[in-house]
Figure 1 (cartoon, helix red, strand yellow):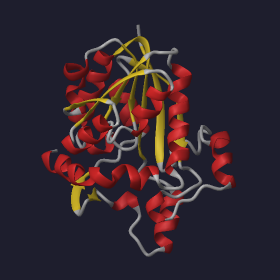
Figure 2 (cartoon, rainbow, N blue to C red):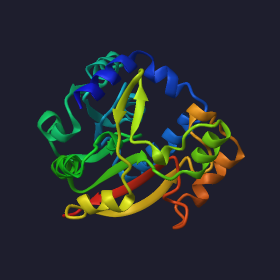
Figure 3 (cartoon, rainbow, N blue to C red):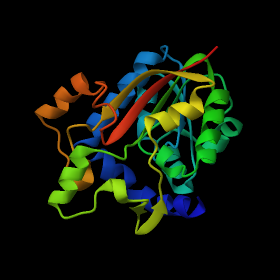
Length: 246
């Protein structure tokens, strides 16, 4: 994990410009945040776990929510703070100690779960979510899917290795370990304290930006089919919404 944190420290300076400036990521972010807004009372409190440079947090603050976030990269935390975000340094597995509890919603977006490479680390996150979120509250989790036909097709056309065979990712020239969790893996560690509300694909019809993903008519069509049982696990990312049990 320290090497992963250092890699993201080096990545932090251009991270927001690279991803927020892409053509497709803002559409994906809007999809995710629409689920957060639909499940969170006006003015509610939201915990952003693995907040990066604070792109999600800034959107939620602008919408009138109270937001506090945590990230294991000091560079990312500094970038988020420079935009007025209440960002704390620390691992997501220690979020409740850094942020407290009683949140209406917890958000863990765009691949943070993939950086948790063991079942014990994923289980630790589940325990933290239970401490962070009030009964009846919401957790919104988004992680990279192992199987994404749009990504596989785009990479094969570029003579690149499909993601399903990779056990690491390159960040600022450093190979960091990653894990590919299934929806069932995530549900299993959370089911004691949370029930699944919905499951859907994000980036089902569009490849990711690093292999040329661009919005088009299919982007607008995607939300209509993203929750279909045969398709909801085949996006670039998987989006799971859960409710905290009483």
